[in-house]
Amino acid sequence: MARRAEPKSQTTQPRTRHSARSQRYLWGLALLVAIAVAFGGGGVRYGLANLLVQITALGLLACFRKAFFDFWSQAPRALVFLALASVALPLLHVLPLPEAVWTRIPGRTLAASAREAVGANGWAPISLDSARTLVALSGLIVPLTILSVGWAVRRDQLHTLGWLFVLLGIANALIGLSQAFSVNALASFYPETPMQGVLFGTFANRNSAGLFLVGCLALASLLPPPKPHPIFGVARLSVCLLLIVAIVLTRSRTALVLTAIPVLLVGVKLVLTRLKLGKTRSDGSNGAIFTLGALGLAILLGGSLLLASPGRLDDTLERFERVGDARTYIWDDALFVSSRYWPVGSGMGTFDEVFQVDESLENMTQRRAGRAHNDYIEVAIEAGLPGLALIAAWLILVVWFSWCARAVPRRWSAWSGSAICLIIALQSATDYPLRNQTMLALAAFAVLLLMRNAVSSNSPVLEEGR
Image 1 (cartoon, rainbow, N blue to C red):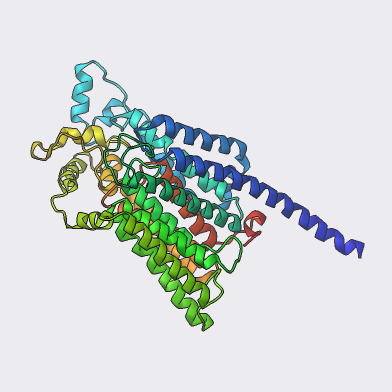
Image 2 (cartoon, helix red, strand yellow):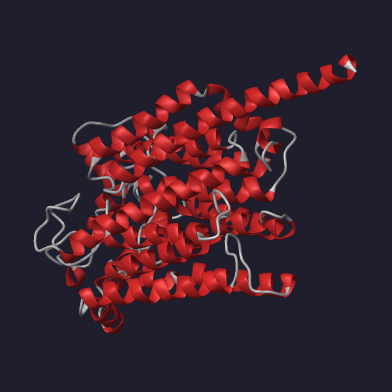
């Protein structure tokens, strides 16, 4: 009997160590996510806040070196390749090239003339602004940390991290409610934002705030409960409604439209659950009484918030009727700029500098464009054909693993990650959602959640807690 018990003890001991290590990884990532949401929503203009988030990520990589190096051997080869390619692209843009090479790259005539005028001939990088490109490269530290360290976290603990995002979404909603209903900027993280009565949360851009809340809505509506409880269905629906009201108060048209994606997924899940079980029951709900209670609470909460903010919903809906959006004029000029630097690009992060050279006088306003307000066009300008190919490869990878997830029991958890990737991809056509540390952290977590739940692994750390 003693001999039979010994292998069991030897097997249990490594699992215990793996579990403890996974717990440490989880706490580290939770700290990073909290700091990223609190300080990383301002974009490139807020370098010190971004630096705080990135230093936190670098500290985690230093502490969790094993997880970082294990990621490159344990993760799917396609994910590893795309992660390396995403880092390599801006890195290649800052490597010096001989004068005979870089002057032949499309769009370098003006730069070559300027360098010749000041006697700065010689080697130069692809990027027309190396400092901007290095800033873009540093922005990848946070998502790379979440992907690599998160790959060593147990699947069930990844759900815990997902619920942390939901809690931070609730915090953004509550902060934003005070912003939307206040007459001053006391509750604003970025007081220079000139829009009163609009929900920003911890973001400088209301579209990013709205998209973050939509991502939290996808997690809140599709993740399994942390612990089964009869009242969880009421709590889940109440949280979802609060997030939807907050999305409306951002007055972001794209965020309001993209809310339909997690809502539709939940509807599909409920229909499939009914067909499979033959009765009304979903995760964490114990019958019709809780469903009716949740609906009653939802109506009460939603009605109270909307009645307390007369005109907010009308203001959001009226924005759909406005024509002559300035972004369409920016896109016209940006498409011309992309043709100037095609197919290599002007260098990651250089849009603001190169766009002003070719901006049409008839489209010029008192404000600088700053961004293309279409990340696909902006990437075409900055990274050319390689950048667009990299985006296409990431999208194909997400679609493929979303398809693979249909056959696993954790499919809805995986598809919550797919939903976040989809809403980011769609909003990128009219905005720039991945230009701040918070959304980069959420995007990396969405990819991690999708792929960890859609694939299996031989690693004991990965298999434990399936």
